[in-house]
Image 1 (cartoon, rainbow, N blue to C red):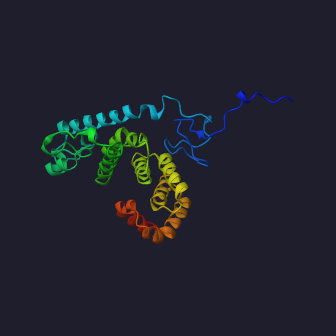
Image 2 (tube, helix red, strand yellow; image 1 turned 90 degrees about the vertical axis):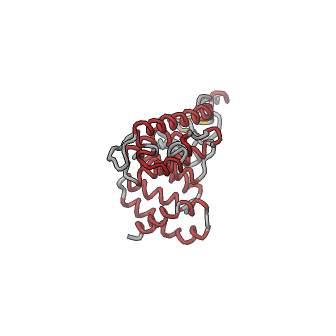
Image 3 (cartoon, rainbow, N blue to C red; image 1 turned 120 degrees about the vertical axis):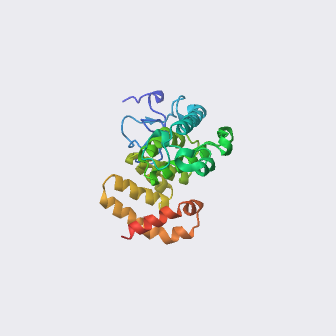
Length: 262
């Protein structure tokens, strides 16, 4: 039997997500970028993402995210409700003097309003990572304050896209990505980010913590118990590693410990 010509066979190489074209790590169960289960659809093998993919649109995408943030900032200035108001929506998604007071509005130049003196922040001096970090912090502040609509608004339209377009993503940023997905109720993305962290470092506390939260979103108590047990088993040794991300997220780790020990 005559074999097929070499040109008719797919080139050897890594698999790519069928939904967004992101490269998939060996053994990955979910796309780290969009949360699509590996194998769903028809993954591309041996080919990089199409030229019009994420890498090609990155510069324009970051500029677009920044523009959205500025629009939301000025909308907040003009339409913010009085302090103490129960109004929750896009107008309250960024800090304003009417809602959060003058100190809060001037203290958080990008994620929290205009810079001191009422001037818009200089976005040209911010890296994509800095923009993503400020948006994450603002979403978490809104969520903690119970302003769910505002948290979802800025999370879906600004914070998640900003993280999706990061050219290089650290474990800490991947954790942020997963927590943002939790806020907007996207369990698949939260689970995918946790699994990607744990594939790289199986005992990383933020990966385990995020996996517990994803299992809770999935209403999967057995998996939640499993990862709570792993979290507690790794806790002491990992804390001694004195990682920067552990110091930044100490309150969340302490809260996860208390919940896991119940």
